[in-house]
Image 1 (cartoon, rainbow, N blue to C red):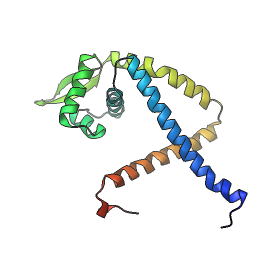
Image 2: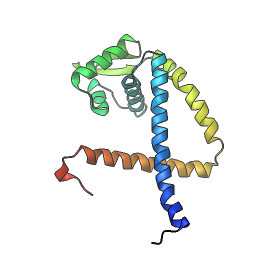
Image 3: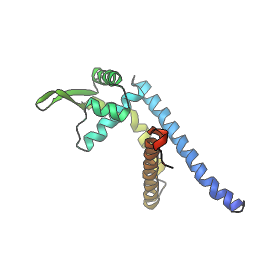
Image 4: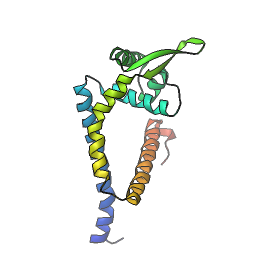
Length: 168
C-alpha cells in the first residue's frame, strides 16, 4: 500500500485510539488512587468491593477464594484484605449454610455509601460527557469497549501461558 496522507491517517487512527484507551486507564487509576486515598482505602480494597458488587448483582456467592482468584492475590494477602475491609466496616463475613468453614462476604450499607461518595463525582462528569453523544453513537462505543475488554482478557490469558503454548 502506498504511503499517502490517507493511509497515514488510517494507520494513525487505531494507534491514537489505543493511546487514548491507555490514557483513560491511567487517569481512571489516578482517580481511584485519589478517591481511595481520601478514604484510607487501598486500590486493592476498592477492586475487591467492585468484585463483590459485580458477583452480588449476578446473584453469586462471594468468598475469600473468589477474591483471591479474581484479584490474583496470595492467601495471606487475601486474608489481610478481608480483615481490612471488615475492620473498616465495608464487609461482613457470614458462614455459608451447613459448612461452617465456608465464609461468604457481603458489602455493608457503609460500603455502598462510601463507594457512592467516592465515585459519584466521576459518574457525574462521565454522564455529562456522554450526554453529548447520540444513543447510536453510545451503542457503537459500548460495543467497541466490550470488544476491547474481550481482547484484553484474551491477551492477558495468552500472556499468562508458558511460551510454548501461546498462540499467534
